[in-house]
Length: 332
Image: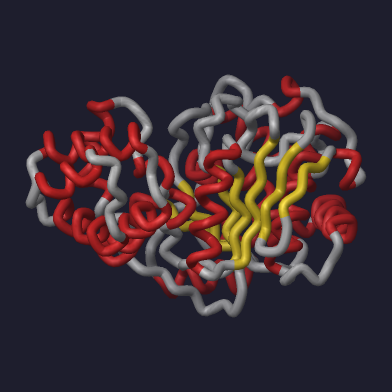
């Protein structure tokens, strides 16, 4: 570890294999906590390279619980978090809209870290019991179109660094790993990032992994399409800066997207979206994000305008709500 620390301090990049081996060593408790903390700090100060991120990803997946699903093509919809916007559960709502539209979704998530309610919070509010049983996960995705992978049940390595991360209290490479360590390893990804710097990093990572993807960032700092202004999209085939009106949706106000003060408030907005009783801004922001996920999982065969229409129909027909109801029945 001392030699590797010296390399980082000399602004050298560690290889994917070296980072993999470090992660495995952490799980075997080979290193003093001071050395791990020093490495995390040095990487953060220098900037994290693509292969370094991939090496830690490889190690987490290798030491975790796999969940390779019996479904031919499915998408994960996730944000990096950390945008400090405290929005309602937009990406989780979008997952159910995509499922209601007839596509399959395997979402990987956790409890809230920087907002009132994370994906695990809002799903648990509905009586869901999280599981890593593969048979049950397969029933969920094949019968409802949706399954949820609660991160702590799968990523065993994270418990070894949890105390260190808590004590150093600044973002580290581990904050970037959530969107990359879905144990079902989906081939399709819709990822929201909070900065253009993160967009460039994940763009390179997804290209190297050979995935189908769409990365989105709202220019005013949201880690999703917020419709509060212009947003940038990066996919396998193009990069574009767009406005809400470019995809046929009106501009929203920031205050219209707030998640409320409690987990119960957030769950109520989630329910309102699926019940088609949410405000137009709440409904539209979910439609926008679901539309880009549909375009990815449908292999780019539909225009974004068509995908917006499909997402809207999923909500207004009640199919999004029916997908969630069926998932909850399969998860009690």
